[in-house]
Amino acid sequence: MGLQGKIAIVTGAGQGIGRGIAEVFAEQGADLVINDIVCSKGLDELAAWIRDKGRRVVAVQGDVSQRADVERIFDRAWAELGPADILVNNAGIETIVPFLELSDEQWRDVTDTNLKSEWMCCQSFCRRIISDGRKGSIVNIGSIQAARVLPGRTHYAPSKLAVEALTRNVSAEVGAHGIRVNCIHPGLIDTPMISWVMQSEELLPQVVAQISLGRPGQPREIGNVAAFLVSDEAAYVTGQALYVDGGWVGK
Image 1 (cartoon, rainbow, N blue to C red):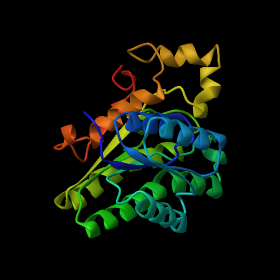
Image 2: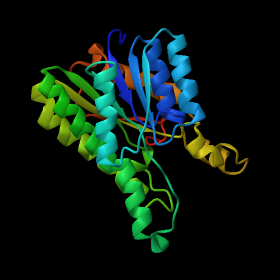
Image 3: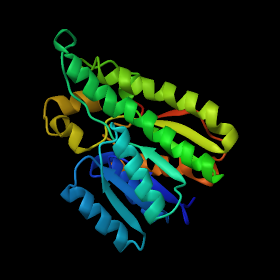
Image 4: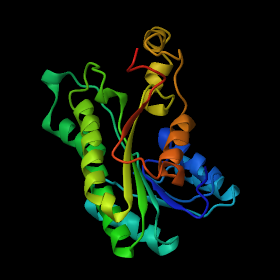
C-alpha cells in the first residue's frame, strides 16, 4: 500500500485525527494540502514535519463551513501542487449541551462545521475531478456517536450520522466518474478534543471498560485506515462506513 505520486487535501489537520492522517499519508508518499480554521502553531509544525519527509506541502487557513473559503482552499491546491487525487473531510467541532438548553446558534455551528462543510468540500472536489477527467477518492470522518447515544450531543450526533448518509449518496452519484467515497467513524481517539476525558481518573476507566480492546485509539490508527481506503488496494470499496473504535460499538 502506498500513495506515491498522489496529492491529498486534509481539512482540520492542525491537530488530532487530521494530523495523524496527514502524517501517515506523507509517510506513504503523498504530497499534501493541509487546512485548519486558524493559522496555528500545530499547522506550521505539521507542514515542517511533512517537508522533512521530502514531501511537498501547502498549509491553508480557512473555514470549511464557508463556501468562499472552500473554493479558495481548492484553488490553492490545484494552483500550487496540481490536481488533487484525495480528499479527507476531517474538520469538525463538538460541544456538549443539554437538549432542552440547545440554542439555534449552537445547532447551526455544529451542523455547519460537521456536515455542511463535508458536503461543500465533496462537491467542489468532485466537480474539479470530473472536469479534469480524473479519478479520485474521498474519506469523510464521522464519529462513533453515529451509533452511540451520549448525553448532550443532540446536535453533534445527528451531524455525524448524516455524514454516513452523505457518503452513501455521493458515492452513488459519482461512482460512474471513478470517484470513491467512504466514511470512517472513529471511537475514543486520544486527541485534544477529548482531553477532558483522557485526563479524568474517574471517567476514562468507565469509557475504556466499554471498548473490547481496552484502550483508546491513536490518531495515526485512523490515518492507517484512511490510507487504505484511498489507496489502489481499496479500488472496489465505496459507499461504506467503517467503525474504527476498538470494538466499542460491538461490545
